[in-house]
Image 1 (tube, rainbow, N blue to C red):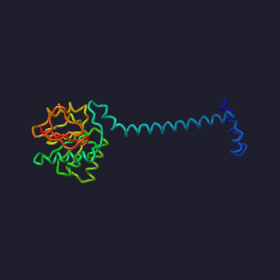
Image 2 (image 1 turned 45 degrees about the vertical axis):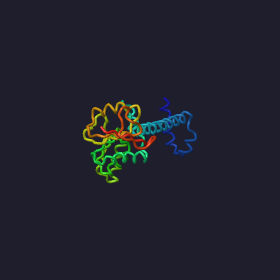
Image 3 (image 1 turned 90 degrees about the vertical axis):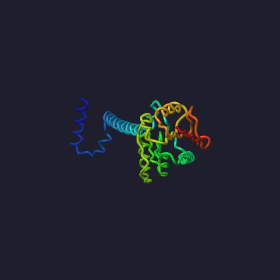
Image 4 (image 1 turned 180 degrees about the vertical axis):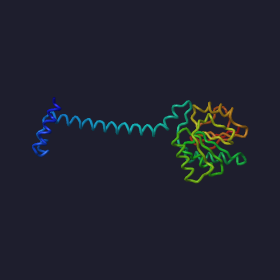
Length: 220
């Protein structure tokens, strides 16, 4: 019934030839409430769409960084300092007669792999964070380091027989498990370079640096 009345009123307004602005000033309270309700509904839908889209975009950006934390073994991304990189390079240089194939476990932004590649090593980095893998590949391309490669891979599924040098920036809680992995996976010509934390039971052949920049070198 109300709809019919509004339609009739609209028809009468058109027929009378009155100014639409003047007619809007004499709209009934019911009509004003209806228009306000429709306006509020449209605004609410717009805000909900914007908020939902922002939440989806934020989730997409954050997921690669959060997902590794859901795994059994976690290698958090903590960029290596300049001194840490230099100490790893010193460790590699001390065995110049050894093999030139290197793998960095949890390679992060790729700085160890890139530095080793610049020194003639066929270096490869494995990392679970897709964003960091893409970033590292871009850095290798921009610096024209063709012997530095990267892949998204689980460190427990790596074929370690391909590498002479294994670099690991681990956390204290995971070193025992990594030690067990190395014992059954490495060849007699392999060398492990542990940064930040040592392997719990192996005896290092030498130690470079001090504090958080310490590097432990193990000859297998």
